[in-house]
Image (cartoon, rainbow, N blue to C red; front, side):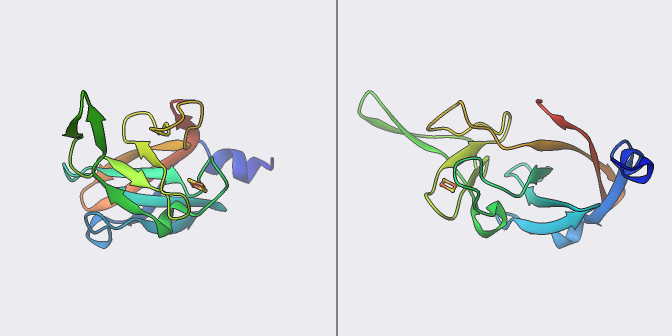
Length: 131
Ligand code: FES
């Protein structure tokens, strides 16, 4: 990796304006050569994930932000509102806290640290969150 790329990956990089990230609508961006999907959860918090599903490689930006649905003891149980990303290809869902697939916890989406500076979203590509 070149010195320039090492430096970029250790800094906070402006990614987008928060007004560009609509609730429940993932948005693709390319940041320093890395494909990311930015999305806003039900609490309004912005997340930056690698824009590639760990199952078969679908672009998560073409998916949706969803509310997990589970069945426990015969009853339908809803998760936190808009707290998962649903892949567009096979509809697997990934947890907001861990990036893990709800159906197979061995698979996880790479997540990146996000900070807000006013309305500006800045992302650190240095070390993915949870890895
Ligand atoms: S490619 Fe994402 S669930 Fe299959």
